[in-house]
Image 1 (cartoon, rainbow, N blue to C red):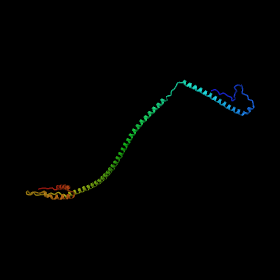
Image 2 (tube, rainbow, N blue to C red):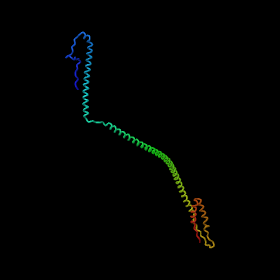
Image 3 (cartoon, one colour):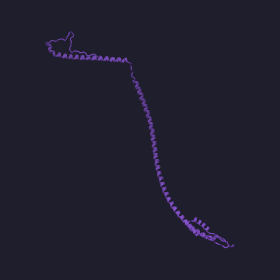
Image 4 (cartoon, rainbow, N blue to C red):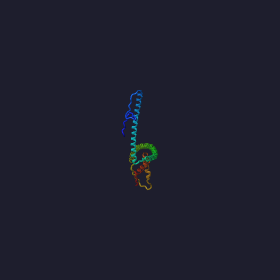
Length: 243
């Protein structure tokens, strides 16, 4: 950039070699105030002109710089931007992502339906198990009551059995004592008869009263079964002899 030139605010006359000299006259004195204002206006315009020239020179320098840069850029290899391709690629990627999201959405919907079905099945199974649990608890209570009743009944039966065993032992002892008493009442008799061919000995008639007495005594204490045994024992206790 060239340096700005220095310009003077003095005006030059086209035909003179130096500044025009003024000599005081009567008219100049009268118009001195008007000329001074005109001079100031000219100086201001001159300064504006100087600034305008400097600005023009500055713009010319900038224009040269821009021309030089443009020439350098033109000499370089041209590069075309691939903005459309980049935008298209991004658009394709976004569409692919949208498609994937839609597929994922459908998949999630299917999984949600399956999960809801499983939840309903689990809920029904849980309710069934609760019902079964209630039924089993009721059955358990009934079974426990039956077991308790059975246990009490078994205890009662055991006590009754113990009582019956005691009675049986008592009756066995009494039976043994009665047998001994009956055996002590039975005696062996020997009957000697003379030989009489015209008259026979009737043993049934002789032993019948004793047998009836034994049977009556046995039936009174022990019943029919024992009376039969006593009857047999009584019969064996009699010996008959014939001479």
